Image: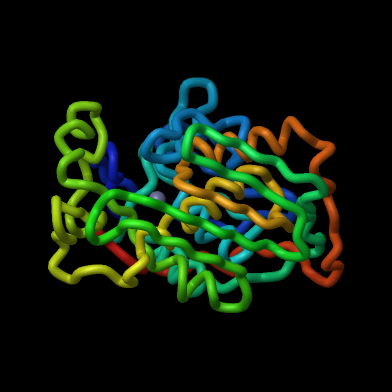
Length: 293
Ligand SMILES: [Zn+2]
């Protein structure tokens, strides 16, 4: 599948192609503009996590990977090659929906390898002031996310998400990234959000949502945090069986939780418990599905 658009932070035009990959490849990013230099979608390559999750290897950067990673994880795509010809993934409409549609158009194909889950055995908790993220043993993946922004449209929002058929696509994937008008100048000075607009970010001024179409869900903000979390947690390399509880967290804390899990191997075990579940990759490369250039 291919898709083109601009990067949220760099504003560069980029073409993206999603290709099938053999079992046990995982998700691999390939910079076609740099002789096919590859970066594995794994926690050890996480570089910057302030406003996006970027990967870096040998000085080569791939920025804002989380929404595509979320779509791949949300649809249980285990193996894929992500080809891009610039340093940042396209932001498209700010959600994971364009990626989901593209993957759906391509179709999925089961592979001759079983999915290996990370089953949580002992709690892992990270606290940073009022921010908190933790994971606990559970029978399936469950995510409980809370946010609290002192803004009349957001305030306190909480959502409990347990993925099952179609739920990620309907409830999480359409939720767009958001930002505050008051922060735009600071972000631009830091070299960020150069590609941002009302086409790809829900922007809030002091009182309201500035986008003419409004929000897609009253709690779109909390849903987007879950979208980001699903993408960031996929960098562990295994789908999770556990209950993630996050309160006012963000990319940095999501990445810390993954790093902590990789250090604390006593807290989880690889398992093929759902023995009928095989790995999956894309069936084929679909036609162009969306443009935002
Ligand atoms: Zn996001």
